[in-house]
Image 1 (tube, rainbow, N blue to C red):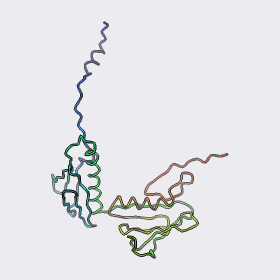
Image 2 (image 1 turned 180 degrees about the vertical axis):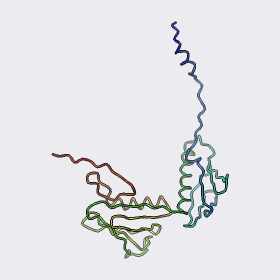
Image 3 (image 1 turned 135 degrees about the vertical axis):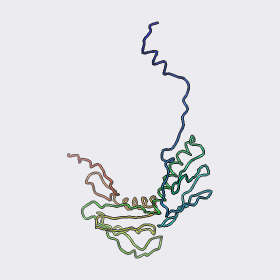
Length: 213
């Protein structure tokens, strides 16, 4: 048998014993700081968040544990982080609680940009008023169609049109804000050849080169 010095070092680090693997959620274990103007009330199935802009609740699973290690600080834990479902819900619920705190204190805002020749928007009174859950206003938009596009604004959304090509949407719920912004964008999604369409925030697309015959 030929002895090679490097072989002994390689064999020394090899072990057939499995190492213990501890799973955790880097997002879920992060503490949440909240201002004194926010009141958190826990029940068996949810966490109520009340702030200057209103109140909301976040559903809680039975295996979740909430504690307040310091004043104005919340931490979330689960019974068994080794279970994939508990670990994934851990991070998700922590994000929802943090979004609820921000929404009830500062709110969320997203701008929409209308890019295209003749594209423009105007905020006007909705002739249907507040029926169907609207707030009495609607967006009147020209998006390159032969007809005008009207989008009623829900009661939970606040809209502003600071310029003909910019719409600013605000809401205390980040999820509902994203859904309504996507609804407006759906009328004219950005296209990759001329770069026209309705853009959300700092959204960018890659312009494709037109093939010449």
